[in-house]
Image (cartoon, rainbow, N blue to C red; front, side, top):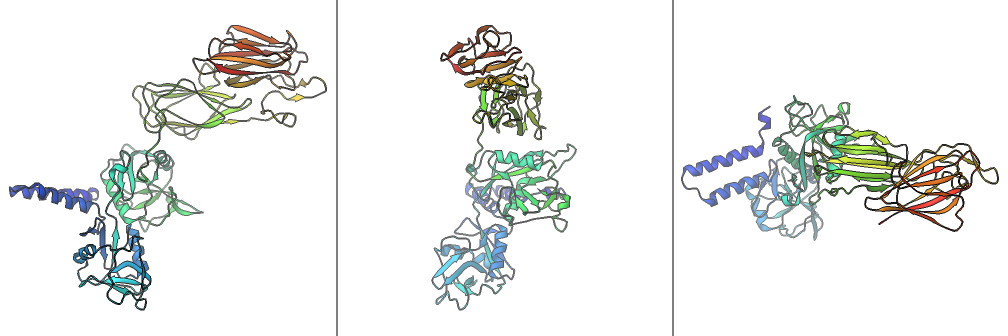
Length: 581
């Protein structure tokens, strides 16, 4: 097993080192000698096994001694990550001579007429060198080379040729085009995430960085990823386990069969045959690093909830976006949306105290889930049922909350995030929405927002109520505030509390536009602060007519108490609360 961990790149490094030792022993070590040796090693590194470079190009070529017709030969080259060879200069053609030997291989040209030809890799037709009188469709639409000259010779595409030559790019994505920590792998950027996660959590984290679990479309990519893994120390879920495999993006379902999580075609496979693929072992997949089930680099099925390290891949030039690092006090979000911790998903700044208000319409409750949550045990996110709750109903830390939903009993949820001095993890993503528990009297109040206030029965004249229940309401300015049942009448024996706030540094101004209550019997008490015992600065009762009553707080909180007696009341009241400087 230890030998299986010895990579091709390690072997090349040993060869380079030996060459330098020999040169040093001869006492004639020139910079140009060392540069030549290192350049040759780097050139070999950029080609997949069996491929080599030639003069005139940085691309890699391989001669296959297999009898294949054009279509089958092209398919095999594509499995490697290339195509049947295209040629673009006399220098490239001459550079193939050492590789060809005595072979006369198929190449990637195909002609529809004697004057119209294309390369299978789609590259420009900027060079061709057919022997005089060709191409001719009488001999065939394809072509092959001869070892003893530089000419192209027409060939029947359906007739197998004993050899063919493949070409693939030997120039990977520039490392500067990949995000920090990512490595160029052909035309993509890849990173090995060494901490163990389930397949779904791994895919989610890859997506946060702008990519997906690795999709593999050719032998060369598979080889390069295998080599990347052999040079990476992985952290297995089981601390006693010294070696483990990695998640990749292949999955199975009955409708699509096998598919990649990034949506690209499932056009290459490297299963550890004959045992795999076999969905009895699971519908997700792993690439082998160990040799327990096959050869390193092969794939097997696994259950999706298996925790493993994983490989993310993404296109070059894509960098993750992340939330701002600061957190102003009392950030306000309404109705539905997504809230992120500061620095998510890259970093959690230390020693933060962040407040978030999630608000829904009157009569709704708030529901929040966490598609991603990973913070250290000394940091915490506290959830409060309403803005004025003294204690949180749930405190979250660690990472095991992805399947849980948290709900309030009213239309406000306050979240407080406190990070430790020494943070760890990517942070959290909170998805929230407002929920209508039930709707009342929608046919009588088509223009009003449905609420959970008492059901009103119209009996002629002033309405009456069948339920005096009046749950507390928490609101954030700017907002419309109304008596329960407005405008069809309010409940008897009401004792309703409204907690209103705006951002710190501002005050609250409340205007009562319409009031119709029994004077001195049913009233609204306006309190300057967030508590029921805060100082009363006004009391509204009776009928306002055309006049607007205005009250202004001395801080960023107002509390309203609405009280009614046991007798039939009026239509109720409506007011607007705004934050002002």
